[in-house]
Length: 234
Image (tube, rainbow, N blue to C red; front, side):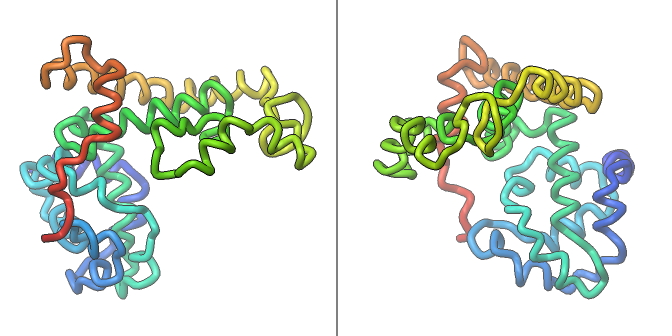
């Protein structure tokens, strides 16, 4: 009893975000995600406060904790100074650390984030740059984005930037020394090990789900694009 709660308490975001919830429901009332998803931050905070291992583990394995947009609308409105968004962040981190994230459709999308934004950072130093956003993966961006993507060097060089080149500017090529420092930061802080865990847990789950090659490109695309349609508020 309380094992997962104790693990959550190790996260500073829980210490900062959970003071004395009285279940008034204001956080749910102002939450944009609650208006669209089957999602209630008040209930999540209440579950965490119970310290019940079975209930918290159910949360850690659920889609529920991945609905939050982390807008923090809940923070300034809580009369007791709680921040449910911080608690959600801590639940997500613990779910990732324990490998529970692969047990939900939304949770499995962590692999997509790791292989796009995470890989971008490790490869280029940027989480997002125009040439890194593949139009085939984001058709919702429309034909204008495809044109920008295909003509990015011409477009951004017109602004006088050193686009993907050494020098100064927001989209410059990050120098080798800075890239080495980024990789070192990830090593020291546990980020590299964290990424490896996402891959390992995803690969194991992919095999369990019948993907013979594990977490290959097929699994990645399914994780990124398939939606069961069961997440909206009924």
